[in-house]
Length: 155
Image (tube, rainbow, N blue to C red):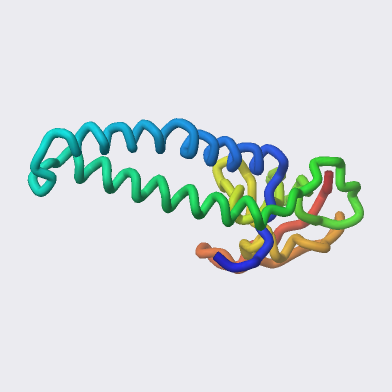
């Protein structure tokens, strides 16, 4: 991990803390108990349950360490209305694409979810939107070619 800020909404941060708590307080103790039980079965070299539990514990411990590092890097994105001066992290942006309007929310890369129209501030579209105002047209290179978007609203 580096010292790069990780931008999250309060809900995204809560989800991260909940995953950490679930792993630390529930899943890890369950796997440690399975590991202990499997160890009591005897020969560890041919004990599939022991091997599986050991691998799962290793995965959980790695994820716990990763989450601890991530939590230290979080910078919360305000959920307060951002006004409509310029696009920023947390802004909901209404874009006109050809004859269709779509609403996107600009979020940190860890919360990006194209299916929910949450775009990362690090994505080509997110980068192009930051700092722009209503009425601005932006061009973004997409796999299908250049796309032209017009900002029709910012919340």
